[in-house]
Length: 255
Image (cartoon, rainbow, N blue to C red; front, side, top):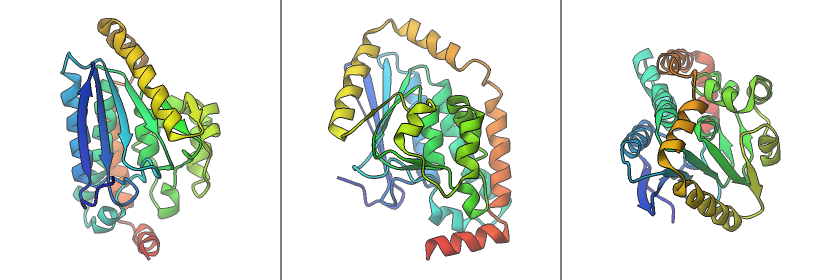
């Protein structure tokens, strides 16, 4: 079952100390501003819930995990303030994920583009299927993966980030993503993926919550400046999206 709502959908449910956040959008699970805001709020809310020990992040359907930013919304941006505000949505989600007290398991069942790669990188642990190819396509439309770069580079290293960012029209397969540290395990089917994620989440949920929280803080040490850095990067993207190059590229893309 996939959503038909133009602003997308987001559902959270919890069971046995495990919370699952599931987002969806009819355009390959892409993100308009409203959905980004709701995802940020969900992470912030769950972070303060002591009954939750681990979070699973997933998207609807069996095809794309996330197509990144909403192209409809990118096309509609008319000034710097709107542009910065839109890209700040991704900055806010990544900051909420890194500050979240619980570990976040990413369930990547399909193709992942742009901001979706940023979300996967901001997870503490990711499992995927063989269909989960990744791409940073931002340069092809005249912007760049600036907001998500710190999260992606932290996870896969600068060299792998450069391989993705410069070769903006090429997909890297799930095994490339695994070899470079984005995914921990890759499975043939979604059924296998879901089974292993559930088992792993149950293990994590059984550990000492204080130890888990300390582990998360250690792993994200040195990222406190991201509060400012990612918003600065959002302003860069917000300016570029107004350029003639990007406006023309977005028109061609939509056609």
